[in-house]
Image 1: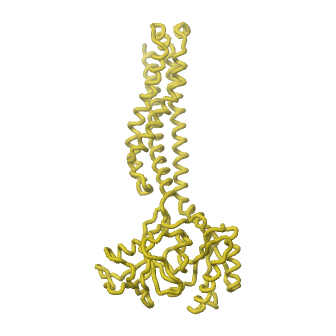
Image 2 (image 1 turned 135 degrees about the vertical axis):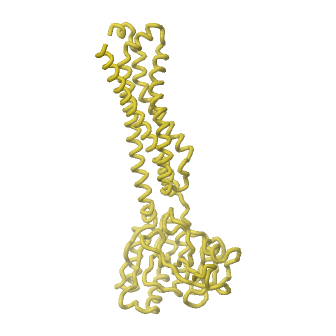
Image 3 (image 1 turned 45 degrees about the horizontal axis):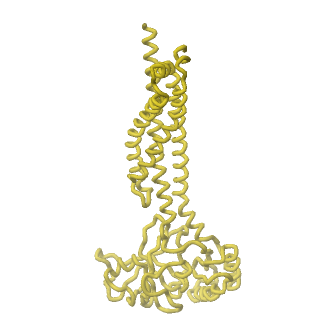
Length: 397
């Protein structure tokens, strides 16, 4: 009797340990599935964010006018004027343009102080008016696929400016910005258009106040040339030839495409989605193997019981349901524990999400359904095996 009691105690402890391990695997798998589901949805949303410009089909390269021949404003303007004239005839392209700051490119944006004619030079907090700005050529908006919300784009050699929607809301709320004049370190520039907001620092970035100025009124030493249409294989050699024809001493640097820059901006969320997806798949596989092993072992231990049940009239369906119920009971405990862990994990990764709430019901329901299906699949084979036990063989054993 003491040996039998000891064996029962040891068997009970072993069963509890095995069941506890499977419950923990189920709970961990649910946490990983929910986290992966939220991150993958967030990445998908980021891929389809409207950037405010169209990066597809745009090739870019940089020219830096930092040599001895470009220390004066007239020298820089002479180079840029020739560059603008020569960009239009690129084979297969509707034209090109250039900008002092390229969207999605590494590095920071430029900001400047300005004033609006007829408005206070400082805001309500006594601070100077500040906005991001870009020095651009006349064809920049068309080349980048940016939509004009109001008015028109810049005309060549005209003392004009274009602002974005965020600028208009921030500095001219409730007013018509068209026709207002801006002073930004030079002669007044008339606002002729309002361009749609753009996420210039990437899909996760917020829109900022932006001011677009003609390069003739705000020349810079470095410009990014952008060309839409012919592809990098055609556009880069053509741009190199144009720059060489203007000045052989100026090099074309950092050739790339806007699609590549867009992909780079999504690199971190893509990596996170891939890693969490792989971890979730591994956790689900371990849960499947775990519940299969535990249920199969339990069926082996209960062979005599199953034979007696069938000898007394139990059907195969009843025996199968009995085994499945045991497996699904473990899954239910795992789901209950994993749900609490999933809520906590979702809250922890909330700052990484875009366009999906941390407690997205569809994600939680889908993950729970996957766990339930996994538990049923892992229990099914042992359940079928139990239903095929011959009563005579079980009783003989």
